[in-house]
Image 1 (cartoon, rainbow, N blue to C red):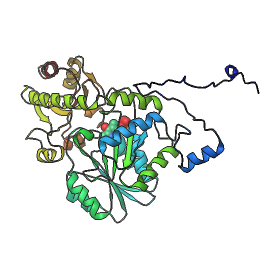
Image 2: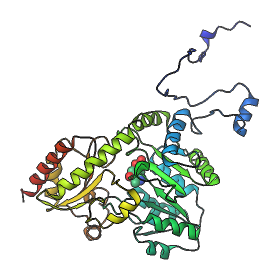
Image 3: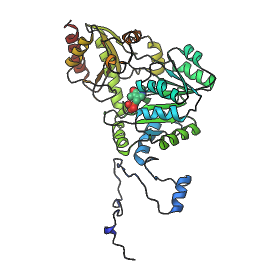
Amino acid sequence: MKNDKLSLVRPDGLPDSASRPVVTPLSPSVVYASDTPDMLDRQYDGDLSGYTYSREGHPNADVVARRIDRMEAAPHPGTMTSSGMAAVSAVLLGLTQKGDHVLGGNQLYGRSLRLMQEDLPRLGLETSLVDPTDADAMRAAIRPNTRMMLVEVVSNPTLRVADIAALSALAKDTGVLLVIDNTFTTPRAFKAFDAGADVVVHSVTKLLAGHSDVMLGYAAACDADLNARLNVFAVTTGLTASPFDCWLAERGMLSFDLRFDRAQATARQLAEHLGKTQGVKRVVYPGRPDHPDHARARSLLGDNNCNMVSFEIEGDRASANAFTRAAEGISFAPTLGDVGTTISHPASSSHRALSPDQRAVLGISEGFFRISVGLEAPDTLCEVFTHAVRAATERR
Ligand SMILES: *Cc1c(COP(=O)(O)O)cnc(C)c1O
C-alpha cells in the first residue's frame, strides 16, 4: 500500500534523537495513541503503564507530583489539581459521605471556610469550626460521625500555630482522618505525614511554584485506598491540572528550597526590624518570644518560621491607604509565596465579611497587615517598610 505520510494530518511526531532534553518537555497533548485495542485494554487494566487522556494523567503532572511526593515523603503518588481549592474540594467531597461530620480549624483559608459553611451542609454533611490551637476544644467537638478534621499548621493572617501533636494523637484515638493543609509551612519547614497527617493538601500556587503565574494544587493520602479514591474523584470531577501549569510549576520548584530559605531569613530580619520601628504597635511572628505559640512553633518547625510576618500600625483605613501607597514597589495583592514581597490587608480582603467586632476578636484592625516576604534585599525591604510606616502614622 502506498502511504504518503506527509498528507496525513498527524505525521510521526518528534524526530529521533540519541541525546535527550535536559528540560522536561511540555506535553500539551490531550490524547495519547495506543497501538491496538489489546494494548489499550492492558493500559486500562494497569498491566501496562501509558497515558490515555490528559484529564486522567499526563507526564507534566506526574513530574511535579513526584517531586512533591518526595518532599512530603508521601507513601503513595499524590494527585495534581487545577488549584489549591480543587485539592481541598477533592478531599472534602471525595472522601466523605452524606451524614458525615467534618471538623475544621476556625481560621482556615477563606474559601475552605466557605466550603465548610455553605457547600458541605447543602450536600448533607455536618460541619463545625473550632480553634485548632486548643486540642481540648477540638476533642470536645468530635462526634460519633466525625470523618475528618481539616487544619492548617499556621493560620492566616494571625499566624497562630495549631497543636498538631495533640491533634494527631486525637485523630489516632478516634479514627478521624487528620487533613493538613501544608501551604504556609511547606515540606521544607514541616513534614506533615511524619507529623501524623492522613491526608496532605497544598496550594502549589503559593510558595512551591512561587512565581504567581500558575494555579495548582496537590493532594495525597497515607492510605493506599483513600489515595486512589482521591485520584479517581479528581479525575471524574475534572479537578485535575493542565500540562502548562505543571510545567511552569516544575520550573518554579527547581529553586524552591533556595527561595524558601532566603525568604524566611529575610522575614526574621524584617520582623525584628518592625519590632523596633516607631509607629508599629505589634509584630506577629512565630519566631518572636512574644508570640502566643512561640514554643509550639519551635517544637513543630524547629528554626523555621516561614516567610510570613503580620503587624499592626496605629490608625484607621486612611492610614492603611497611606501605608500601601507609600510601600513603593511592594505589591498590595491578595496572595502569598511570590518571589516578590506582597502585602495583604485582611480587613478589606480575606476578612471583609466579618464585622469589625468579629475582626477585633482576632486582633484584625484597620491597621493590621500581613506580609509575605519575597526575595528582595533585606535592607532595602526594611527601608521601604520604615518609610511606609512613617508615611502612614505621621499623617495622623
Ligand atoms: C491559597 C490557599 C488555598 C487555595 O489555593 P488556590 O491555589 O488559590 O486555589 C488553600 N489553602 C491555603 C492555606 C491557601 O493559602
